[in-house]
Length: 328
Image (cartoon, rainbow, N blue to C red; front, side):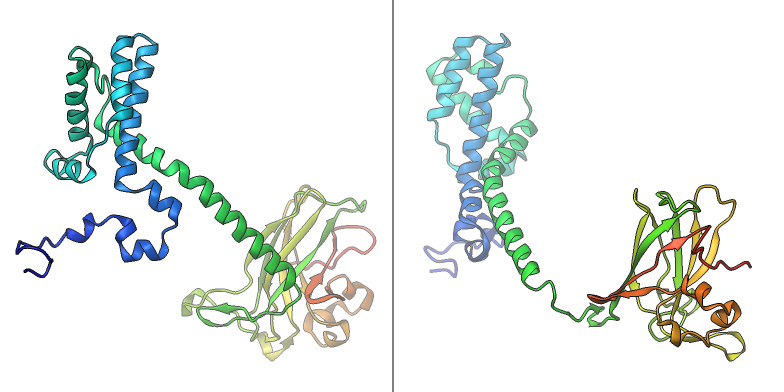
C-alpha cells in the first residue's frame, strides 16, 4: 500500500487540485452550498454542453446550419453526460477543456446523424465555450450572493442605528487616533445669498500644535480642499488642532487657516477660524490685532450643542457680518 491509499502507485503532487470543492476541507468550511453546486466540475461540463446546444439552435434559426442538424445536436447535448475527470485528462494534452468536449460531442452526434456532426461547434472557438460556460455557472450564484449581501447590509445598518450615539476610539496604524472634528457651515455673498461654487483650502496644526512638514517624513495634518454645494454649504472633517507657538514665541489658539476662492474674486481670501470660545482666544496675536470683539466673532466657530465634535462657521464675504480677512 502507498501513502495515497489503494495499490502502490506514484503519488502526484497536484492530486489535491483534482479534489472537487465539495470534498475539499477549505471549500466545505467556507463555500456556500449554491456556489459549490454551481461551480462543480459536472456543472461546468453541463454548462459547456448547454452552450453548444444554444449555439446549434441559434444557428439553425437563422439558417447558418440546417435546422434538422441543429435539432439533432441540441438533443444530443441535452441527453449527453460526459465525465469531467476524463475531459480534464484530455484537456491537459490539448490545452483546453473545450477540445475534448467538442470531440466527444461530435462522435455522439455522428452516431445519430453523420451529416449533422459536421455542424457541431460550427463557427465557434474554444474560448467561446469556456467563457460562456463560466458565466452560466456564475449566474445562479448571483441571487444567493445578492441575498447574503442584502442581509449583511440590513444587519450593519441596524447595528449602526443602535449605536449611532456611542463614542468609539478611532485608530490609525493600530494606534489610538485623534478625535475627528467636523467644521461645517455656509458661504454667503454680500446680498446674503449662498455661494454654490466657493472652494475652501485649509491648513492647520496637528492636535499637539505641530505643523508636520515633508522634510521630516511626517504626513501633514489638516490640509484639505472642499467646495460648497448648491446651497452654499461645506463640510470638512479633520482633527482638532492644538495651540502652537509662532514666530517670536507667541502662543496661537487652536485655529484653522482658510483660503476661499469664489466667482468674482480676483484672488483668494485668506482668514482663520478659531475652534475655541472667544474668551480663550483674546490673547491670540490675530485676536489682539483685530481688537473688536464683534469683528472677532466672525472668525469663531461655535460647537454644536448636541455634538461637541461638530463646529459651525458661516462665512460672509461682504456686507453686514463680513468675516475678517487677512492681507499678506
